Image (cartoon, rainbow, N blue to C red; front, side, top):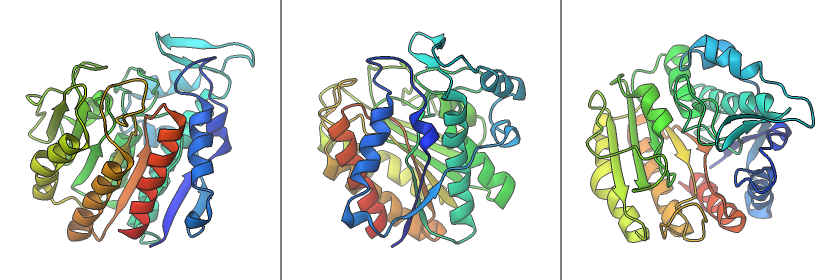
Length: 309
């Protein structure tokens, strides 16, 4: 099955300083992995910029404008919190990252393709409505969901997040709206300290926590026993994936023991469910993953599963 790949060179220009784990080499590693012959059938396109209107469906317009107004000089950097900064290229990269999510929704809703993978950065799932955090500026998955509703008339959009860190930003953006479903598996305790199973929003939020050291079997069980049944019951018209690969056993920022085969299994299960409910429409957005080799091999396994599902 053809999969549309969105990326953009501007996403390489966002740099938060030496030794920062969310670095341009992350995207380079993913794109190298997807440049192999087995991925020659990928349809490749450049991510457009998101508009202020699209971003303002999720974030207050004053917040969007304030972030976009931060344009440091080439040798300068502006720190927004302890681990999130902006350089001269950050604003455009953030616009391209959210813009890829929007364009991915357009592509699947227009029937051009059924699967999209957005190889972009910065990630988005920690960005709250009016607060950047955790390497994130705009809540890309929530922006995608709101665009699907506003531009394509969908009434049930699901966001599923398998990053090792809880998608607190996405949850904060959608937790009061039962037309958007949010499910997350994540390590606990771990940054950002949110995502307890008791956090249910308007009945549309489902969190499954995994203790440090949990392996692929525990990861699969959390999805098979808790999160996928809830997603199935929601019957989505579109599935947006926050595809973070930092639950991998080699990732330095957490302590789960998930492997490439586990990411591929979950991808296939999500696609199978999407086939049943919404003609297979899936838009996947790159989130975390900080061991370059593990990130590259895991993203490749994920895209391979998107292509064959």
